[in-house]
Length: 205
Image (cartoon, rainbow, N blue to C red; front, side, top):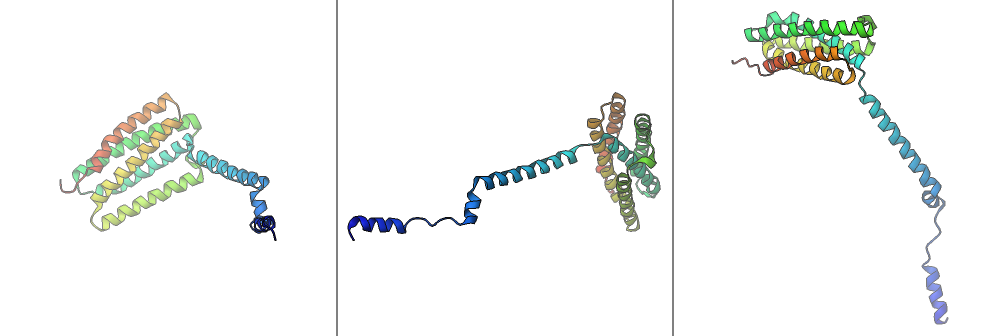
């Protein structure tokens, strides 16, 4: 074997083996294009879902807020007389007044603009509001029988106020109406002042 034949033999032995059909498939342009297409489709679906879920339906938010205010007012009426702190009872009475005025304003607006009727509110909105009310009542009942109603009531009302204010902000963004904006601003400012009273409440004062 001369030198050239020896070099040819070494070269032949170092040649890579032929790719399997599976490896060839993975490296083919058609396969890569298909994978890219599937990934792109998934991204479009995910982004689309995120955008749609982030959209706020102003009408539904308004209806939900009306129910929330009604339910919170009912809970206040039920537990306000059981509060020991005269300051907390005063804050609670003020909150009841603000919620009553706000509810009258929002209900009148919803009736005029959307022909609002409570029986026409979507089932899931009613169920969500009812579940939240029942949870609030249960927490306050437990606090009452354990002798810590004032503390828990102040905390819960601060939380309810924050939820209402958040919904009011969403309504302003989704329903462009000067009359409604005035109503919301009036309610929002009043609730903001009351929030500090409830949030800063201390039984030791």
